[in-house]
Image (spheres, one colour):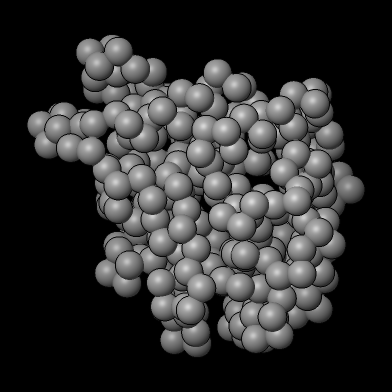
Amino acid sequence: MRQENTITIGTNSANPLLAQRPGYGTMRLTGDDFWGEPRDRQGAIALLRKAIELGVNFFDTADFYGPGVTNKLLVEALYPYTPDLIIATKVGARRGDDKSWLPFGKPAELRASVENNLNQLKVEQLSLVHFGQAINSSDNFEEGWATMLALQEEGKIQHLGLTNATIDQFNSAISMGNVASVENMYSYAQRVTDPTSAYGFQGGEVLSLCEQRQIPFIPFFSLQTSLPAEQPKMKELALAKGVSEAQLNIAWLLHQSPFMLPIPGTTSVQHLVENINAAHISLSAEELAFLG
């Protein structure tokens, strides 16, 4: 079966966004430990432009990638932006000077992050912002989400989503306002989508909630959590179909739900081409059943 390769974000709004599947995650364009400039800056810029040539119009970034590196790469590569371009950023975290990942979800901090993204990306309004918290954060989720809704009302944000969201946070956010999309960890090898749950093959709880409400689900680390471990069935079917295991992983994601928007990242133009071409891989019901 072949999958529809576009997805609508913000269906309840007057100005929904139409994204091509898959998108591209920029996190890997930074230096080691997702810190500092890329080893090949011009190569990173060329890769982003190649993604546009291949039809990608959804790019995932954050001001704490680098920090500030991927936002500036997007500007150098793609500014001025075409009307159909979607740059999704996120707030709720920052990087410490020791490269640590720290919570940054208090109202004043969220406002600072939004302003930072606006300035770095050279836009007057952010197309899509995902708000998230570390599981061990002491920041108040409802207070943070209310701040994001206020920023949206002020015109600084077009669409609001969640990242690293638990079931309880999803339900709380929905009760307070519209959720345009959810960006959580999910992959062939790691199918639990509530970050408070133990890893295992128990089904996607947050993903199911998104499907019920027709909200796009954006899986991150979809290749990182699948490819390092041996996946015998994935390897066998990839060989039989003459595709790479990475391509089959992306195709599997696309076949899981019409609301799935994978954002595989890479620093290789060859792998970028392969990742985008994965959208054209058709999987039969029998093949999907074989993969499990």
